[in-house]
Length: 120
Image (cartoon, rainbow, N blue to C red; front, side):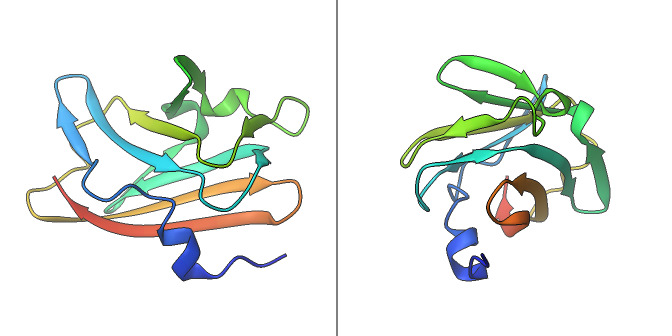
C-alpha cells in the first residue's frame, strides 16, 4: 500500500511547530483512517536526526517514548486522533523555515515517510 505524498503532508498540523524551554514539539492528526504505528524510526529536523529513543509521542494524555512503539506493542492511531511529537532539544530549530522528516512503520504500508516544512 502506497500513500500519496500530498496526503501524508496533511497529517502534519500546519502552524503547530513550537520551541520552548523543554524542547521542540509539533502536532499530527490521522486523516488517513484507523490504523497502527508499529515503530518510530526517526524524526529529522533540518540537519539533525533523532532516533526513536529521543522522540516522545503524546496522545490522549499518554506519553509514549518512540522506542516503546514496536510490532509487538503498536500504537493504535484512530481516524481523527491527534498526537504531539516532542523532542527535548532546541538546537535543531532555526528562525524561519524548518524542514522536518518523520519515518514511521505501519503494519499494512511498511515504512512511511512524512515530509513537511513550517516556521516557528
